[in-house]
Length: 338
Image 1 (cartoon, rainbow, N blue to C red):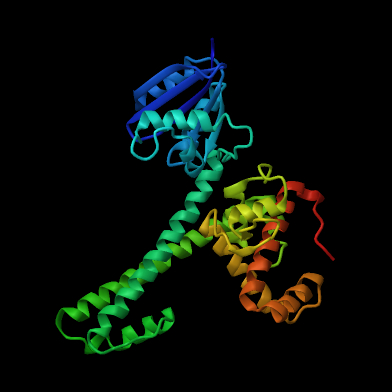
Image 2 (image 1 turned 90 degrees about the vertical axis):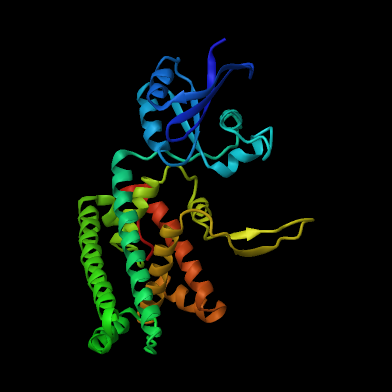
């Protein structure tokens, strides 16, 4: 019998492969496959379904296997765990490959779409920029912590930390002056690097017509629009806008039983970076809505008065996510609400 489904446990150098036929019997069991032999092994098989966990390198392998005629399905690791027969104590690469092979055969399993080269390269710009922002924040906090040892306590505001640290630089003794000066120089270097990546994001948004349509939404700027495109492409992997909002973690978690519905806090599932961008855009929309009379602005202001600021911000972010999905799914046919 021919092999229909293959599960691959990805790693850096040694991979595990588990393939089954149409009867579910294991036909290909390779606990250790070298990295340079994996593509050759998969190319020798007839077209089949290949399942992998969505992890580092998964999208690269997915593109290679798709070019060989295979159907590739990426599964979130948390959905694979229940199918590992040996449980925690028997966890190994071979058991993981068998669990992946079993998981991809489930009829209602949810899969992660494989990203294209362009999507991954654009997403790298966002990841690198966010890393620089985090480094800058850490450096400013390091300045605050070191200066507090000399009785100079600074507030959290970044601009104030820069100004006050420069003002007291000459009064610091010995090597303290050198250290704080070097840290301020590092902050300036990171500022320049972040500004360069901001220009990259602007160029990406300018080149893509879909990004321009997304930026017509209030609260969606260049950074959010390009990140949305890099993460979900045209949005065809989601059946509706609410499903996309739930994937982002902007929908409330359910704790329902016995016919009684209980809705809790938002799940915060999915990508934290994209969800943060939508939350920041929602805050900007809510501030600007006080001076506008369109339907979305009136709804946002009324919601904030009725339910409070933060609940309104999350609701606006969820609404923007659903509208962004509609923009990507419908394309030029999308019409902004009056």
